[in-house]
Length: 332
Ligand SMILES: C[S@@+](CC[C@H](N)C(=O)[O-])C[C@H]1O[C@@H](n2cnc3c(N)ncnc32)[C@H](O)[C@@H]1O
Image (tube, rainbow, N blue to C red; front, side):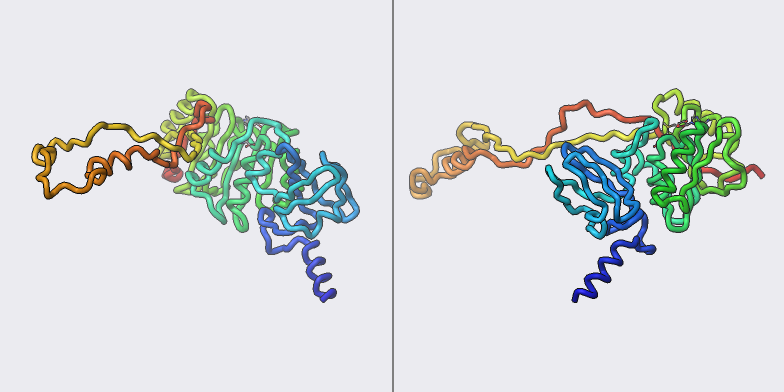
């Protein structure tokens, strides 16, 4: 009926409190929507009210046309269309305004797994940078966990905190302005994990025993192997860490193509068995063209259809050196 249609439309306009920020099904007022335009270009827009508008490559869009639409759907514009995508960390990493280098999904997936992160975990992070990884961390620890992230660049820290609030993530991720190499992480955090993506991670190590719970996981990302070596040395010197491992994440693409392979002509069949290769007695012989040799020759002349994999042409490379370790607990 018209009444129930109107009710469901109204429900779709209000964000469902039970839905995770990263798991919205319909666009609602207050959402940050990623508009995928032509040529893979993505525009980010916050739907502030029903009256607003947004300019896209294909023309002006009214917010009222976005509200209530299902994420993933296509919206026709004057000169083309846009695809409505939700704010999820992997898509956000492609759309965000870069203030620094950021971490990308091949590394972030590995880090989240290695740090044993899950809902309810307390995580310390530095530096925040463009907060790309902070979004990933927040999604992993919600709804009961928390991320405390630090950056010594005041403007960057303020921008990250503003962005986290705009994305309705402030309950799960808080960014503070702090130099963690000079001041360390706040003592007494009793965190389940710490992750470092900054130039001198080794300088933070002496502060870690006071802010991690026994069994907590340590992780760091460094672009140069010398940084990873210095951090590993600091962890050993601290004597409170075990299971120290270094890793690199290589991503290598394969293309899967159907191929026809010509069969090799191996000449007349000869299995080396003298008895078999000897002429068959007259009454054993089959009709001409039906001999075993001629049948197998016929089959072998057919091209072979296979699904072939081949590595992509670009040189596979890694993005950085990862270090992981487990914290024993503070000294007795
Ligand atoms: C490469 S960025 C981190 C990027 C982040 N992982 C992301 O995915 O967006 C490194 C950040 O560390 C910050 N930084 C460097 N030294 C720091 C320190 N001693 N304390 C806190 N932050 C620091 C820098 O300001 C910079 O923003």
